[in-house]
Length: 335
Image (cartoon, rainbow, N blue to C red):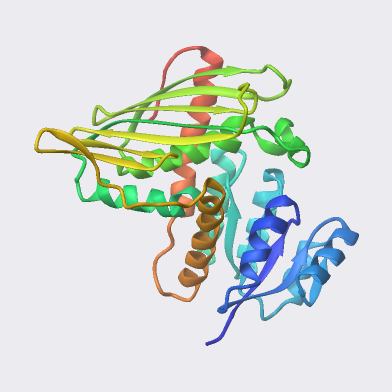
């Protein structure tokens, strides 16, 4: 079996702790080159993971690595568009860590480049690949919990020192909404079966930041009458990071963290979730393993891509509306 030859751009925390440890162990993938502006970091990481070549310039890597067929982009959001379009123009398939871009306009430019060059474009939304999330989604798809009418999801997480660029609007495009919020409403909309969003309202807080929001409460009304609440924060005072997703249907409900699927049977609620003893850390790791395996499988033509560029453009449309709603202090309709 011929391996999928990959170049990885951006050697920060997510690349070194997640992408490279997983990709370098997959039997049908081979990381042939890495690229980072920091020459010393690029050299050290290449040596650590046994990668043959390293670069400090994306264009040089794209021109030099003729056998490379795909690029994994783990850079700060500010250069997602530049790197993604360069890779797509070089006829490489692309995976971009979330969010695809800083704005919907930038996201559209990347998608247009993918279509023009007939390339595959995937956006990293790893929570869709959590084992517990996939099980809950299958129950909802089978209508085992009735019609979904309300989902509430949230993620509270302290920023680490390496993620300071998230607080600089020019680099990130926004604050906690683009870091954690977009991940949660992507997961929630996926659970709900992608209902059309009618309008959004949002309240933002800036307790410890100046340029961007560090906490956000978002509420969405769907055209089918269902509703969605999202909480995302870097500044909620809590003992530990916390992630949750609660889905409510007319015949039952489902939750992630803790994992429960409650179905009304013979007048009583019964937990029908398969037994699971996996820790949140294990589920987090498996979500990335499943996501990267899926990407490689899609590049080999085994299945269509999940979390496409077109879906990311739709998510960025909602993000833009969230920022407008927070600024205006009133609901903003999604056209």
